[in-house]
View 1 (cartoon, rainbow, N blue to C red):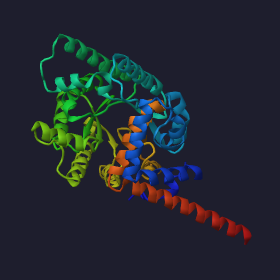
View 2 (view 1 turned 30 degrees about the horizontal axis):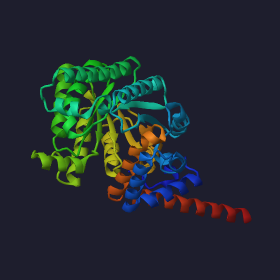
View 3 (view 1 turned 180 degrees about the vertical axis):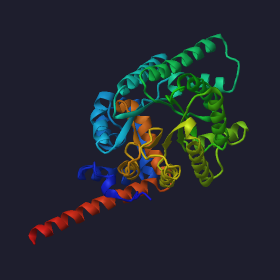
View 4 (view 1 turned 90 degrees about the vertical axis):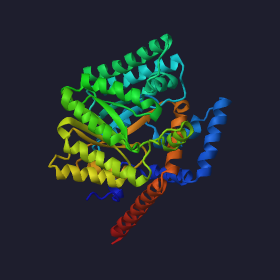
Length: 398
């Protein structure tokens, strides 16, 4: 069993000042009213174009974001690698849907792939399909609705951008994660990601699809992918997450009168996630797996599967992953035990990453026990360091 409560290992890269800042932050965002007030503040300052970088950069931005550019993130990637943790840099600018915004984001995705080429500090690159086109077009394509001439042209441009990223990743031997999106967009994304995997994953997994395991149909889809990989002779790149849009998905299903796509309970989601892990490890000859979760039980479950199937802990086909700024007790202790670990690191200028930061704060407040767990671990390490310092002083006096 991995000791995920070992705070000395979990926070060995953090200074006392880092821990105090994190304690203050998580103490603040554990209150729902603080997060709601912050959301209103960000909205108002955005409308009146009031600069807030000076306030956010040393606090929530520093906790959850790597930097404004890839180059400014380099020292962080180097520091993480000292502890056996590799990086994934995610351009997290949100809120723009114009042609200029789409093009700028597309070019940033290209830059992130080029940055990752031959860079031992970087494990994967990533992109959001919804950042390559407008939501309405993806929704219509997923519903298999007929597209008019302009829509067909725009959809063709979207697919061209998508394939360009996968081709560039293939040419540079860089693994690329295709993020999952809302249920109403996902079918079109899945269809094209499958095409890209058939094309680029012949020798190894370059293109990775993402399954949100809070959807009750994902195990069936996982089996479908395996059968397709066997039939078409390729390796499935498989990223697992639990999911990020539960309330929205349930509300939309209710409004439009279709079956709720989400598992009925958290336990069902947890079981779904672990069954997915079991399936890919049992068929590891046709999979590479990326397990993106902050759930302690699922991380231990995957570690146990690796041992059970007599795989090496650093098997390059299997990676554990957590978000930057969270669950260091998982990341650092897994890496310390010799497993492949990567941190998902957002980057973007402060103004453009604000929606992401608000969502991160909301998710930490909403996920049962997440903020409390972070706080307890931070407090435990602060206490441990104080005790250790006191003992050292006493020993010197003797």
